[in-house]
Length: 185
Image (cartoon, rainbow, N blue to C red; front, side, top):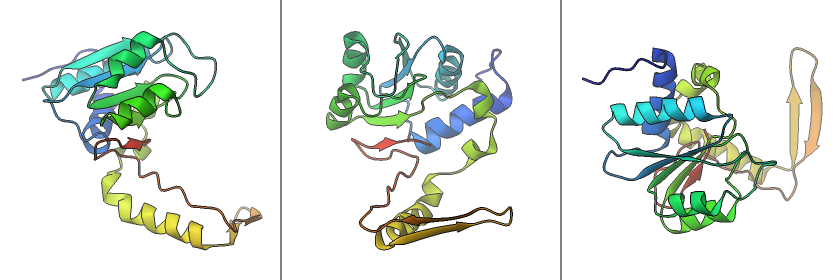
């Protein structure tokens, strides 16, 4: 039986939920966790969670990026290219990089998890079964695409109107199921 010593049960549960339900994890695939100095502890938590499922996980540290979309080092890009599942745990997102695009075009699945923390893994929002919510996400995305005006009104007094004519809803379901998928829970 696998036991842990470095992380709380809630932290590991949050990581396991993301790996299994959002990443469609298989212990027979190559999983790579990309992280930087600011996200090292959460990367170790994900690695430990994946190992508890019988998987072999490769940790790849990158220098701190200055902004979202900054390309990783060539060594990191090479490490993720043939991966089946990549957990992008850098403090700045790699989702819109050529390295991520090449990796998903090669058939890998990419979960974008920028700036994740151990504290965030305890949040109930990450305990959701994202795949089970997909039909709702798709329906809302379709309504946003069809709509021309968005109104937000709350009991606290918020009242805002937005023009949405000609805009498209972005259906980002928060999980990756198929080869080449990109998602961000």
